[in-house]
Image 1: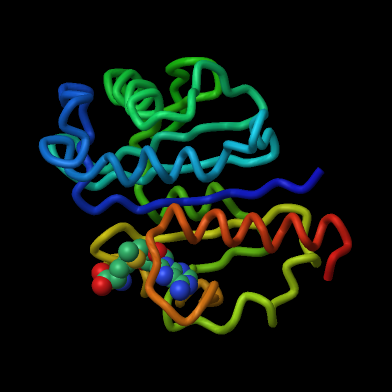
Image 2 (image 1 turned 90 degrees about the vertical axis):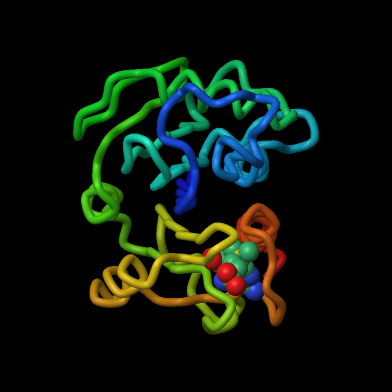
Length: 202
Ligand SMILES: C[S@@+](CC[C@H](N)C(=O)[O-])C[C@H]1O[C@@H](n2cnc3c(N)ncnc32)[C@H](O)[C@@H]1O
């Protein structure tokens, strides 16, 4: 089965577990966006996408950078409400980190690696920056790889130095449509494109 990686860069999102689940959009630095992103990565009507990995690269205070990884193959205790994802993120952000992956709960890991280290570690041969000004995703060869990685920005977009880093690595920019959408909605559209390809619809 193909593996799909989704990376969200959260420019303001909290990097310690001290935030309140009642204030995900405020005091937690827009972690509500990350929670919806996680849900879009995994939830089908009555099951989870086990072939997806979701990386939340968080750059907010007080301990940036931190990356929380949700790995579909081993994921447990995730329910479709935002507070459920928020609670798993909160637990992960309470774990001590180094440059490797530390396990938090089943299928959830956390690391203190930099963006460059994360991109290096992902190393998939098909890596895409999703961007409003990218080429139409329907013109790209999504079917050519067994592991695909999609990188997205948050409400502020991807920071320019990170975009520059990706472009210098030869990463392509692709767009899912002519309008600027929320990151979690882009994930749903990309997964739909991949589902259609896998099912032989195009
Ligand atoms: C809310 S948008 C960013 C908003 C916008 N860049 C800004 O700050 O004015 C969040 C992310 O979703 C992705 N995105 C939004 N619309 C897209 C589109 N039409 N095609 C591909 N990616 C898109 C991009 O990765 C973007 O950084």
